[in-house]
Image (spheres, rainbow, N blue to C red):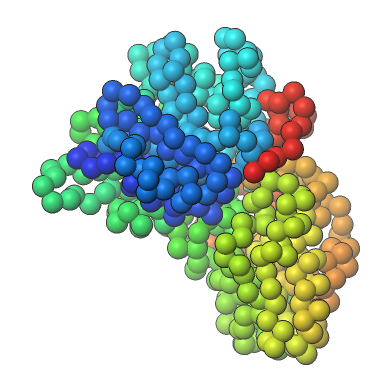
Length: 473
Ligand code: SF4
């Protein structure tokens, strides 16, 4: 995952707006942050490893001048977590200047690499985004929009993009729309005559800017900002929507809307469905904070079992799932959660979480609650078991790391140490969302990949590196 923002704000500095929008998307990537800005003649890029507020601070922003900008926060899915792979990627090529921010993961990276005139030697990093940027910079065509239209049919995989040259800000969604991208309109400030526009991964970034939601960018659509007459839409490919259902289950912020659905409400309804599908006698329902909270509330309402918090989250620790190595993940969970022993001691608990990926985090949570005195622990997961890796932008690319691909339900229950375990069905997820299955990618649950993925090194996270590199974020 990653967070992306694009801003065109005539009469206003774009960098503070883009940084503020990116701050609302911090949950989508915590390894690096960056911003590209232009006043119409030059593109300037500033980026670094670290959180948005550290990288794009108040000392830095006043020097980033211009009324158009793009911004990006990174969670690595291709290439290591090093400065060279931070974004926006930037290129002054033979044909044009390009800055690019990417949310997603390409699956034909090796084939695209063969197109690059001087091969890998031209790249400073190892991300598929830098490769795409280099190809755009040398693609024939009259301008960046034309270059995109020529290049995109050869690009396969998941990509929501924000890009810019000196004059335009461009948003793109791949033909399946795996990753979200929305268009918003900035309010008119006193003395201004023209609206500004913003592109963002999620509607929560529009909210923080006071921007009104206009619409989702459609799968296979490109939007061009910075031209007279407002945003220009180009349907560069036929779209067939397959939005990542994990965005609705877990990843996106609960105050965001996707496909017209508020994600808090969708998750609360997933909890209700889970209570109907997997009831259990217990004293309390408690969430794994914070992301399990909406589904736990739904489970409590539907079951009539009281809701209570039994764990405290350190809000300054990164997401366990989002950190790029197993070692960091394992260390993260003890930093992140603490029990409330007086709340759990002697109680039969329904503990609600939104996913079990590798199982190690869940195992530590169960251990922690047992040490705090819980009498019984009944795990309820508001998503189906994850059997298959994701190649479209979530860092679960190795099947053997997924506990559901190795163990059956009883085996997982025993591994995590719970008294009982149940997952929400795919049908239950869809009932909660209230939209047809055809609109979503469920590949990590059902193994049906909308874009074929070669099971070889071409889809490996470190495909552009000579040898696997230990992430260093
Ligand atoms: S495979 Fe899973 S995580 Fe990846 S895009 Fe599809 S639903 Fe989302």
